[in-house]
Amino acid sequence: MDAVQADGGLITREDLANWEVKIEAPRQTRYRGIDVYKLDTWVQGPAMLQTLNILENFDLRTMGYNSAEYLHTLYQAMNLAFADRDFYYGDPAFPPAEPIEGLLSKEYAQTRAQTIGKRNNSAAAPGDPYPYQGDKNPFLDLLLARQKAYAEGATTPSSSRKHIPRDPTRPFTPGGVAPIAQSTITDSSGVDYDAAFWRGTTSIAAADKEGWMVAITPSGGWVPGWIAGDTGIGLSQRMQSFVLDPNENPYNVVAPGKRPRATLTPSIAVKEGKPWMAFAVQGGDSQDQNLLQYFLNRVEFGMTPQQAAEAANMNSFQLHDSFGEHSITPGKMLLDDETPKWVREELRARGYTLQFSERTSGPITSVEIDLEHGTMRGGVSNHGEDHGIAW
Image (cartoon, rainbow, N blue to C red):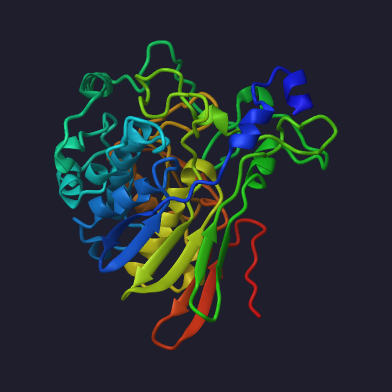
């Protein structure tokens, strides 16, 4: 604490003494008979639930895994869910209450699904979920201004914020791009910032013989960070996920004691009323994108857990980055290096700007209980340092 205050920090001993763990009910939706649970709106987790609700209105299986039609539909559904995330998500312990009932309404999702066309909608904006929970939007003026700005081609909610596109010469880092000034920073082992970013989050998915499951994604103190004196303790860098301008997100404006809307998003799926799958991943804003595709790989395309974890992902940049400058790049899509030529051509014709990489997700980790045989199985992708262990 002395080190924090010596460097101008605002945290006090009283702050630490008054801190307590918040026990919260999860948020849930049902997709094709499977109940999926995520954390509340102080993280981005409900965005995956919203996306599933939207996608339930389409026949994804007939489209085919990673076809141009499938990738387009996935991208557009995520556009709509992340536009809502960027405007409505914040700490539910602080008023006003986020409109989570409306956001997770099947009727709201159906209305949103009907807006999806054949080309990328670079003007995809937050909707109004309040009528779907019988309420009136307290920020209707801000919402209408956001929708108007997006329709006119402005991708930033405030004239005071600059649009800073990602540097195309730097390798892809899912879920957030380090500020340019930090791009050459290395840690003590000589690893550059992009590589160190991947080590800043840990995900654990575990189950026991009694059927208990847990998914955990701790994060917040990646290198380079602020270290408290000579203690070796790094303080969280999550405060950069707050906004200062309510035009950007009136629910996530910085305030004393408030949690910034974070990206961490472990997941639990329940089938036939019994715990079925725990799954999690690292990677900032890409987390729910990767976990969504892992889940669909299992449910829609019948992949094994290991196949689903290693399968190529698509990543969208049409969302406000939770880190740095909160930049957004409508229409930009990351695909696997081996994406077929005909898929690339059709996606470009639909209005996408494509980027390619050998690695298209963070390290996905999953464990399942085989309800038919009473056994367990899991999957761990080859994109990180994760491992599967059984005993």
